[in-house]
Image 1: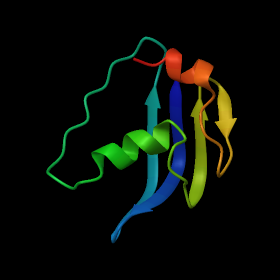
Image 2: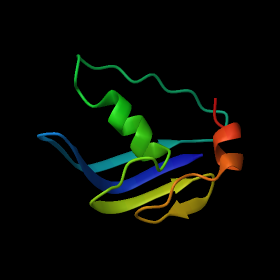
Image 3: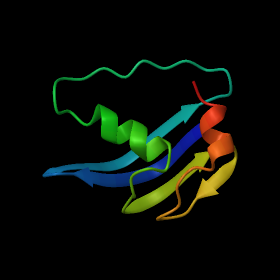
Length: 79
């Protein structure tokens, strides 16, 4: 399960504000966008690999704090 609640982050000069996203267990999502639209940064935020400036990121029911990365057990459970 991945949940973003009012998350804000930036990539280069692009700023993303108040993003809400929920992907339930066994859910599937396709992320589309033009080149340099922030798709990889969004995935990195979901996995706790990129810091957020505001909001809450939850990965497998665990709240990721700023600077936290995902536990290796979490990564193995995500395909």
